[in-house]
Length: 64
Image (cartoon, rainbow, N blue to C red; front, side, top):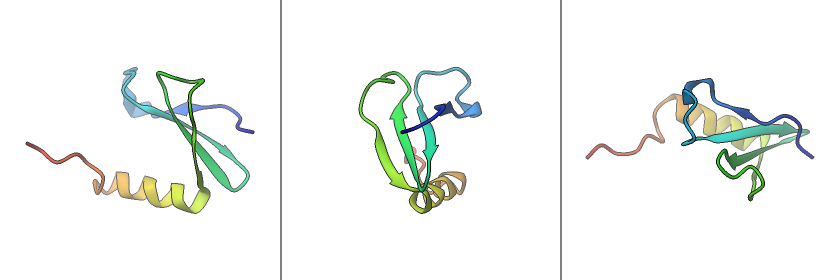
């Protein structure tokens, strides 16, 4: 279903990240440490909104 999986260029080689892959109308998101594990599937629109929220810092963990 999904093609090539990509990891963020900002991950710096860390294993503390997710990978994503596009298919027509949907995106898959998985844990980079468990490539054969479960995949969260979201619509392209939901994925775009999530990426926008991340870029705006709206999903950052609270400091403390």
